Image (cartoon, rainbow over all chains, first blue to last red; front, side):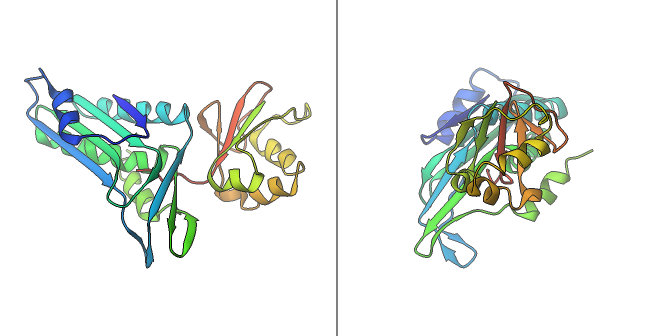
Length: 149
Length: 83
């Protein structure tokens, strides 16, 4: 499942809902991305996430489907927020569940790496030194490239 | 044809969405960019760093050579920074 929303999410409640009744699941991995209060040397007071409604949902669904093709997952979830966020706020949640832990760990890492390079979101950071659009990080492209095989 | 702009492209163009009717010879993403640049100084400025701009046609990532036609939804945006 995928969701794009302005509101916050409750990690515990999401895991409970995703795994409820699926007693063949042996391991659940979750990743939560948070808003940092710094970017390099600059302080960040607000991060605003813009996205492409419609394409965002399609891309997240495609990425999730790819993870399910590559690993034997029993359940998966991607939740990505948009709009204005503050340091400490949740940005993104990825949950993967499988009979064995290795598939869940690998699939979660794959999902996070891919959504950083393929999901149409753009971050704008604001702080005492002004506003700026966040530049993509080369390290994210390198991380995502590991999965091309 | 509906053209969408996101992030700093939206700011430079001055709108997030516009309906356009390019001439019949505009049949690729690259040709559309060339034509859009003639519409205003803001458009030209938005597409200054053309090599970093990404495009999508009908919500699928597209290349400069990808075809465009009347009725398509074409989006332009910087490299993504989600996650």
